[in-house]
Length: 76
Image (cartoon, rainbow, N blue to C red; front, side):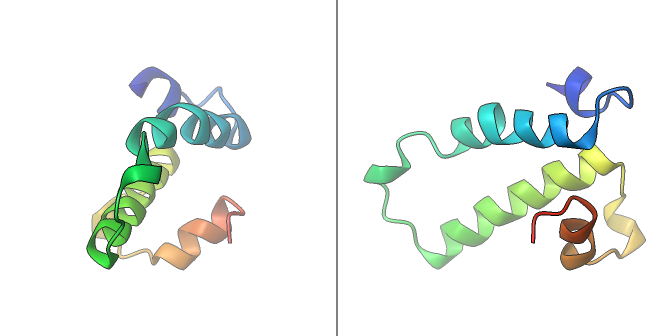
């Protein structure tokens, strides 16, 4: 998936669709049987933010807030 996520020729909307269809579905596979605690929810949100940062090529050292990243990809 690195080739797709890091490819600059693929639009952000296409990358977001790939993220939702393939990556998030694998992360939440059989989640209907889980008891999702707050810790699990924060870990899933952190993984999603990691994917978005990587897709936008924003370093975690740049101190960009999660809200700014969500606004950039129009997911708020």
